[in-house]
Image (cartoon, rainbow, N blue to C red; front, side):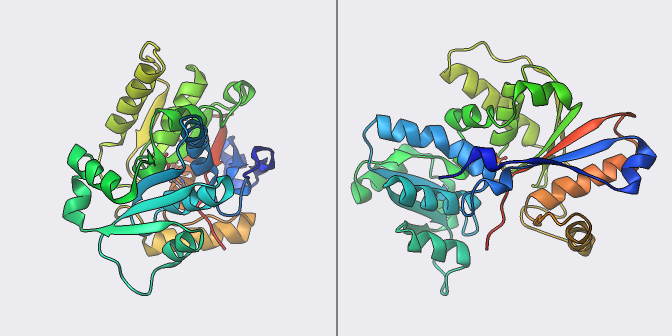
Length: 297
Ligand SMILES: *Cc1c(COP(=O)(O)O)cnc(C)c1O
């Protein structure tokens, strides 16, 4: 089981922070579990609780062949005794990559579908066919993001943390983690999301998730405006990288001895360092970067 108490916060020290009079802290949610990324656990936790409550024995979810969410769902299925099924975007390619080998070793059934079919997975006859093939299951959306995931992510930070830090940074894939952080903030601090995808749709995703969350918990739509999404640090798009980012990762690990990777956390860290260098943060800012995990051995 992932251990939330294993997540520790450390301060990073470097000349640039002294020069700019800012402090940078990193919350190591990557330390919560070896196989389940910090934020993937937060997002799965209430979904698993709900699946148990409703008496399901199978979990079904969706993702790309390199998805951390597929990996985490497979691991959770094994820990909590669920059968797991993943609908994977694209044809099966042998040999399978390490994510999918791990998933199969956890007992997950992989169903590969063409990109065209995958793109219509939200349609009800697609779901009907899945039920005909696998029997009834608890469905978790792609990336694990739904209202229960937002609820789980709203518990990543405590009220003390929201009060102490002037800025809280996270990376955004679906935006579910960020939506949860915004819900948890109750309007405190400044939440800064770094999109790891190319394009400027992430803010729309987050706003929609906040609305869905409010609807499913019968709350008034939160009117928090203490958040901002930076779309400048995608380095070409999802899972893409560039020498600039690769070099940054090597330097960062060498300097701070904290692992980061190119799909998620390195893009955020690069963005934070770049914004500090460009005087984005006011003097005496106390910045918290959330390390969502995404590393595996
Ligand atoms: C999935 C993932 C994210 C993105 O989370 P979203 O809630 O989809 O925005 C960020 N960091 C890591 C390490 C992840 O695995």
